[in-house]
Length: 308
Image 1 (cartoon, rainbow, N blue to C red):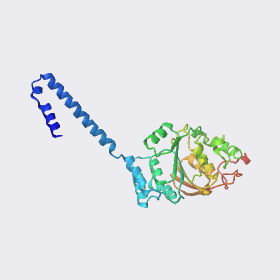
Image 2: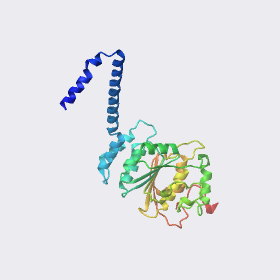
Image 3: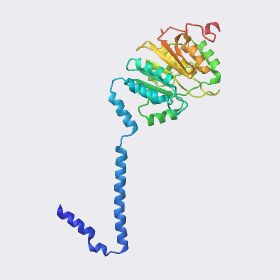
Image 4: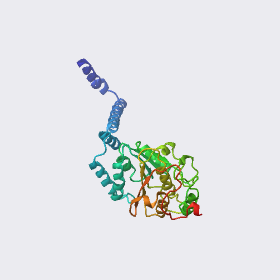
């Protein structure tokens, strides 16, 4: 080993090399430079990909809790930072806490369905720790982007066929079909009701959802799809549960909107409204018998099918 090192030194410093012309010196310099750069690039690459990323750290932190519920301090911290975001479209602390409190009391695992990919998407996933959280959004590209960027997110896209300007016409048409295609208890996968979403993944109709949040689709212009279909669909999914808890909590965000108020009254019902503000309505719906043909027990805002 010692002799090899000596030979190597003699080869590198041999006078023969020193007597070579300028071209040989340049060749040697280029040769050494190449291997030096290659070594540095390899070192940088190794350091970059061996350093834990933010998502890796988050996953490791979540794994630490295992099957246990999130500690109260963690939940409060998440709510605090989510509500103090600089983005003007985020939900306020009071709204976040309402949903969070219900998720905390939900029996594990909690089934949480969210209409809309928003600023709170990652928060909802984190708060429903150990539970099942599914997101539905009208933008297929954004849904694909979120799943690629955050593999833990379960998101699907849906094609809405409604228009905000047709609100009252659609509600009236739905009520006329309340004993047929637009029944309050049914499997929407096989329904032709105009307000029913029948193109979601099959398993969405099979899950007994404990909590549903309507925070999409976006848009308030006349040709926007509006939230008529998500609200109607939420009412049917809640009443058509076959197992689990008989009650379903349905939250409607942007509760000041006409669509949210009208469809909430018609398909989620005032008697089920347990808490509300200008921005968030909280309903608690009971499972119904398969032969039920009435959404609300109290009078609704539009004439029923029997009086038309």
